[in-house]
Image: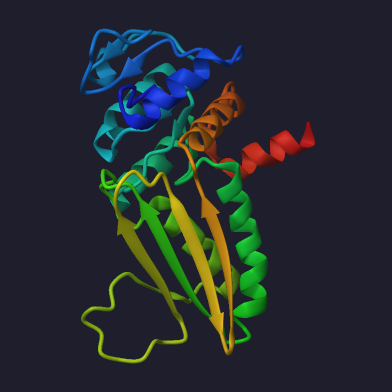
Length: 251
């Protein structure tokens, strides 16, 4: 468990303790209290414990070490961290030629179902002239904005719209009317909000909103554990939560 002592690391640790099909055998975190139920190492290179899968809920800074460990051990990795740079995304794709990687900006079943709904909605509303806006809200400790989930939702809309929409993150310096190809993405940070995402289709005299609210971090933790179970034994390639959902539906 990379990010073992972070918010999500602790949630996943608690969930795994109640799951008869999951066991966390080691953790990686820059901080170790010594009171964790498993050994915690301050960097990936120090971790020599054998495991089936790595789950990462930490920081993009940890990516290099985690991929090196995964490649050395030929171990699949579930990347739940967001905020990767273009170079880091290239490194992930490169590593997927050697190991199995499941990367998702959001691990919840609900959000990944919403993405499918958005594609259908976009194909109806965008050709009819509706504008699309995305508003996301998170706790005041989240460092990246917009969220990885907001970008995932935007990509779903953009793909269904033909791929030529322009993402607009800030209108404070724009003194012009909204362009028809704009896709606005706004971020709110405050308190302990686990995560709220709203996709707004605004047309002539009517507005349709698709909204997802996460009331606790358990929805992401459960998704991460399901992803790890799915990825166990996979050899190489890029996967996402859609693969996990499809596999569960076929059982």
